[in-house]
Length: 381
Image 1 (cartoon, helix red, strand yellow):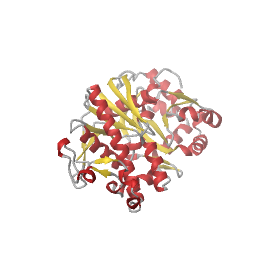
Image 2 (cartoon, rainbow, N blue to C red):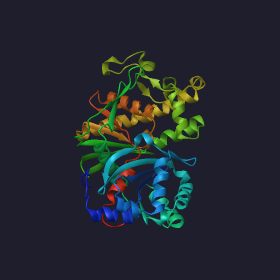
Image 3 (cartoon, helix red, strand yellow):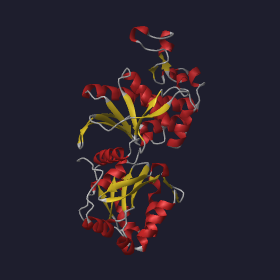
Image 4 (cartoon, helix red, strand yellow):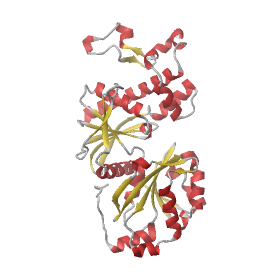
């Protein structure tokens, strides 16, 4: 993976090739739970190109850009739209669309109905679903999936989006104080080296040293899938959104055993405050205490357990690699500020304020952007 340039070839041959053989441009990141789709809409169409543009392509562009919802399942995140960006020599806008992976059949039928398969022969894709649904794309749309590595795509997309959006990166100031908590922009223009903590069903931790130079240094099986699985078992909830809603209303201190439960207050010798979790779910060995906790408390304790563990492992990795910047990504964090704030607090605590937990506005879409960017202007469609 090389450096992503914000401007590319603008020659007439490339423009003609792009319009004639590869429009529309889509990138897909097909995850186990959510499918993320990015659509690049060219805004620099010349009069000659407009005259040559087929009606099907015009209809697709109008449909995608004039709506914010597509049926019951598809949604366009209009607040994330990126304008005046350059992709493969064309200047235009990025649109960000998502739908549950379980609705893939409906998406394919919609794409067929709109005539997408008559314009292109392949779509850029990454994620496990790029393999799982490859046969479905071929059978329903007669399309092949041009597959790209998931981590390469993630880093390609992250670098490109951050470079084209100066307010992409941020951190939470006073994350545990509701009265003072606020998002603060972070200057990520000189990013290297940094840790990338990718929280999906499990967690992978990458050390990124430069464009295309990275290695996986650690990870844990206790991630977003663990949180949801335990919440379903403990609370009877049926979705990630429901689990987060429960956690937002709960209090983990009745479920977890705290330092003050053991020492009666702070443990001064090791500078451990009384409200620090000493044992996750440590109070649940008592029948009486189990009868007092709510579903909300159990969900909150589960979320605290997972985020504390990730924060602790991340701090150790940063220390070992001598890296000071830590960026958290992954679908676990999408529309999940409660988990972000818990991670911010955990990393702050475990690193003794030496590290900041950094987050990104276009969370979830970097893989889709990155796989599209990797299909260079080579004449292949």
